Length: 311
Image: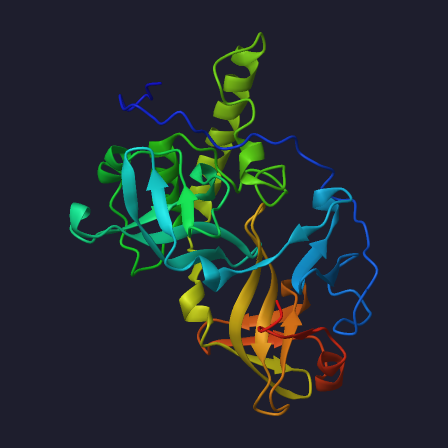
């Protein structure tokens, strides 16, 4: 297969999934003492499963449970294209409005003069957790010719527009869902092929969305992407005092959404880590490296505890 860039792409392509009902939720019972009521998100529960695997149940999965993963476990994963290894994951860019991972920062190594590049979840297939590999549907040559974005500086919407346009990806911000109108990056790629009797309509609609997004990107040029490594040094405040420091994140690997922040409360509650959902944040001060939750310290004590040795 040949792209509009004139490059051959590997046979593997991102999995196209039918979009579930994103607004409905299902609830899980709590089988273990680790977790307590109330639910941490609107209608969403977590539970421990065999053996000690942390899962979340929400409407995006329509009745099926999805294992959550520590985001930091993906650090060092190889980004594997059909024509070779592009590099290894060193950081992640988080959308601070939706708490979704939009890009992986990848160090390419000697083949590209150790240049750091961005890899979108649009191109990523199912992770090989054992082999620590993320397969991608792009080639090394495409990465070599991709827009050179300084990953040590804030990534603006204009930079994103250039990047997404190069790979022919849709604009994830064109809709009310996590990814456009849906819950998964693969869902946005549905209908972007050239086949089918409704192809002219689909292409025209895609162009309309792209044009609308171009206007938005010009009006809202501020950067909304944050380094997850940078967030690891942030402190969290409760309504009645300090809580602790961000120590990690729990990720839904299908939607690339951050479901929980892992918070170390050792400054006032020795030896304990708790899970805080992004929806519980009421204020974020990027200048002061501070996150504030609308909870008391006691309410946090009643939230699910996190045991890294178990999860």
